[in-house]
Image 1 (cartoon, rainbow, N blue to C red):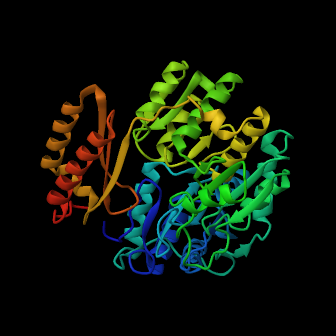
Image 2 (image 1 turned 135 degrees about the vertical axis):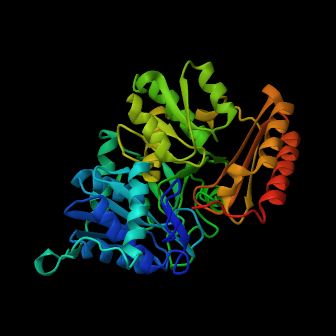
Length: 456
């Protein structure tokens, strides 16, 4: 699109200062203020070197259109969403989540703390084009007292932790030893304190951000260091956040990584047993392992499927008044407690479950989900949108799907956050899954490596 900004499944992302420039982000701030008219916006960021630069640009754009801005500083995405819901104001987050530090991004929440509808995102994209076009005369710029103010809120993080502590209904985590990995990201100054407040003994790793080490060898995308630390410290549980702390994976006492599918299954069964799983239904995405679906079927729990992206999970939850949904990546939404995926909250609910049951995580998960072998590959391409018109790829997908039959599943999709095509194959035999995935990845690479970009 002219203007260079396009929303994906989780906001706008790009290489900071080249693809995602301060000029473009300033224009985005102005467009957001016009399309989401509100007297005040709250903004925050993760720990990337470029975060302060782009947050300043976003805030300047909002203030230039007359909106006041509350700068909450370095804060997890779910904390910004909570502030948005508490104060009924829109929010902006400068973060690229689990991406490498050179990337950055912008996430926007409407007043009330939920991600924007696609129609609102399209309207903002179109307004950015108008802002950047010198031939288009926009609204009269405010001046004098009408110019927006930018103030800080140094207590936002503490208020968020106070809120989270109320969600376990007075219970505590005494006797539990945790290792918490904050990915050198937005929760670095908050995560360990949350669990300590409730009585847990906490070892903190990945909490020394330097602007360039976010997600580097730590966090939910690289949990090996956490596994080692859990065993080394004799901990009961390890919690791995990502850069903006909206997702979480866990590690049991033996150092085994537990993904979002297993955690979601545990939470679904727990809520169902306590009569708190609305509609006796859990919402998942197309990436959720077949083993999860079989496990829920055995326990009489309904599974509702959506496209990839926590925004789609949230929409499905709200459409039917449901209470639980999530993704394999660790985005888990407890809709009665939050408006978005919240890694700190997920860790809190998990730790609370362990204390309530008096059982270790491995014991709680034993026999719950038997995952079908799944292979995930990311194929770099110039423009992932070209996948939609690539007949050769879809013919290959149809052929491989037919060959697997009921013994497996194939999913090929463009990433909404990176210039890659994602290939997922499930099969009862791990070797078969890997072979099929490799063939499909090669087909994608062969046909999309130099594919022309589709029109914006």
